[in-house]
Amino acid sequence: MEEIRVSPDYNWFRSTVPLKRIIVDDDDSKVWSLYDAGPKNIRCPIIFLPPVSGTAEVFFQQVLALSGWGYRVISLQYPVYWDLLEFCDGFRKLLDHLQLDKVHLFGASLGGFLAQKFAEVTHKSPRVHSLILCNSFSDTSIFNQTWTANSFWLMPAFMLKKIVLGNFAKGPVDPKMADAIDFMVDRLESLNQSELASRLTLNCQNSYVEPHKIKDVAVTIMDVFDQSALSHEAKEEMYKLYPNARRAHLKTGGNFPYLCRSAEVNLYIQIHLRQFHGTRYAAISPEMVSAEELEVQKTNLSNNSESDDES
Image (cartoon, rainbow, N blue to C red; front, side, top):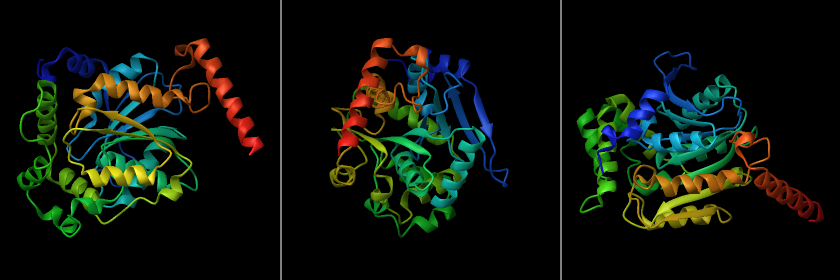
């Protein structure tokens, strides 16, 4: 397979989906970068949040495929935030700016943790309708780095990159996974010292998710069975936190299945989003959903509401 950066799909993505830069904070150095594809009349899109090493481009295969099927898809890159509450406040302002009331979030690793924290912080006035958590975690203490979290800002960029690269797969991997790792290393190189240091700080600051605050949010947990940066204990903890979550298992895919196993990942995303078809929280344009599927969905919804009434 060709290297991702010179692949036709990536070049098509870069030439057809414009990169937008948006400032929502008083500090105009805090710039959100995002790709927004698909029908703009959809008010509840799916938003992708990258891992520590990622930029908005790492989800290009999801943006292309899902927008082609009629979904509105936003892939974004965070500004420099050093604190979880500061991030959540900035993200809320971004959703206000984009005039989005509620959204579906797909978060990879750190992105998944931030998605859970945002759902938790906004639980009294919910902004998150559902979550897809890919290779993610619920407690930063699993990295055993909470004691260094406050010193990342002092470290030079090369040292921070070394810390991140230490979590990348070592040893033999298949060609698609090797291409995915190369692409992520390239994305990592594009991040400056403060971007990296702030993400590592958010990733390792002592914090955990309080699941009782987000118990009404539909969750799919997506993970891989082969080697990834997440320990078996961290995965088990996620299953315990969300006992009713749907599970999407990939036999292989490493740390970056959305790049090297994109067809499977896109299918699981579609399955997750299908439960909202025909509702006001659909992330897809109604014209793109078959009449038969809408009928099935409406029947399911009425059956659910009847069973709720009975209980």
